[in-house]
Every structure is written in structure tokens, then in C-alpha cells.
Length: 253
Picture (cartoon, rainbow, N blue to C red):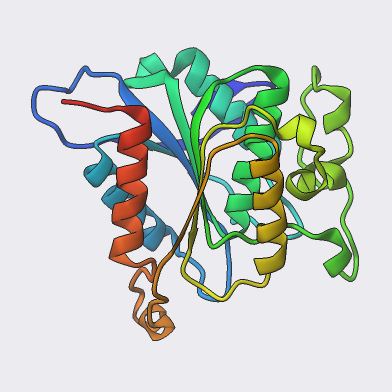
């Protein structure tokens, strides 16, 4: 349990098992999962994150909260957790100067939002954002858009973060000037996504704002695997995510 910005946050920290580095401050990535057609269970999510941790030799942080849905995104909880890592991560052996973000499906939309918020606030410094099978929150697709559905709002929030519906749609609605200076972006796709055209639009805005963007396509795994509780993100995708994290964070042991 940690506390920041008025939030009591329950987080899970997963570290690589490296002999002789028990007191080492590891580069860290936040993993933000999402529900979907073949949702990641908590067990599968932890398994996938552990694979990325072991391959990248970096630590991971997961926020223990209800699954992300189109009705409620715990954006501010994640932002508070991200800032806590930057301020106090050394308490848990985390290097708050080397933070990356990894998001899956709607969680990838949260990753984009957090990167924009961190850029606007000039803190914390995000090294890399990885967006997997991105699904954007598009309020116009909902029959009953939910405005402002967050548990609490930080007391010292910037005024532009008050309108939650605008926050949800930040990646697509942001001006290029607001996107200039974002961390390198890795787009990984393994599904025929509903947000395909929106993702292309967002990528074009990132490139137009002078950011580094890399898009990689992976073969789609058999969704029937999910019936047996097997994580469906391909091993190639997991390995590539770990490689990009290690390359960007420059973790050497």
C-alpha cells in the first residue's frame, strides 16, 4: 500500500530474479491491462508481466484495482502511482528516473493519456510508451457517455484535467503542440482492431509532432487458447516488448 495525491494505492511489484542484485534499483514499467474480447485474467496478466520482467530484466508495477472498462478509467490513480514511483520508488528498489509505460487494449489508451499528462506537468519523465492492440475510449460510441466517473479528483489538479470525458479522449483530441516531446512510442498489433483508423490518425499526429513512432505487426494467436486460461499474447510480441524496454532503459547487468 502506498499513498500519493490523496489516493491509497494498492500496487504489485514484480522484479527480475537476478542473483547479486537484490538491492539494485531496477528500471521500471507500469503495466496497464484492459478487458476485451478475450480478456486477460489476473493470473494471465501476472504471467505475461512476469515474462516481460524476466526477459527485460526490469521491474514492473501493477495497480491493484477493478478492471479498466469504458465506464471508468482509473486515470488519476495511475498518475498518482506513477508519480509515487518517481518520488519514492527507491523504497522498493525501483529507479524512478527510468519509467516506461506498457498498455494493453484500452490500457494502451490510458498509457497515451498518462504520457500526455506527464509531458504537460513536466513530471515524471517517461522513457518509453508501448501500446499493444490499442483501443481508444470513444465517448460517441457509448449509448450513455459517463462524464466525470472517477472515484476522486486530486485537490491540486491542473484545470484541463477536470473534464474527464476530455481526458479520456486526449490522444485523439490533442493538438500537435501538446504531443511534441512525448517519449518514443512502440505500437504492437496482433488483432484486427476496432480502433484501426483511429490508431493510424494518432500515429500520424505523433509523427507530425516530431515524435519517434515504431509500428510492428504480429500474427494473431488462436483465441481458443483463452478457453483454457492460456495467455493469448504471442511469445514474439512479449519478447519484442521486453527487447524495446531493455533497449530504451539501457539496463545492463
